[in-house]
Image (cartoon, rainbow, N blue to C red; front, side, top):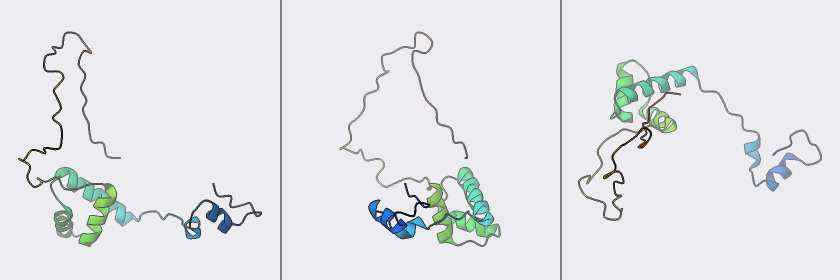
Length: 127
């Protein structure tokens, strides 16, 4: 939406009309370093192997492997990749009374012919 080559309307005016800060017009993304990519790949491998590991445990494993990386960096990379440790939360045996219990709609249905009842499966594919 920004016309950089148009000299009739300055960039500052264009940014003001679009409610953008001028500094965002000059920002260029930098490519991640090779070390960052290597660490993120290794964190993903460890998380795939041990999904219950959090950032502290993955940090300790990386330290054992000789990677010089801080715990906050591991936590930041995990947050960027959208991965969190899988662990039990508090009060799992208590029923949430605010949520409605959904009925099982296929209780009295018998699969009588092909494509009568459908299901779905989700498979993790690393991108």
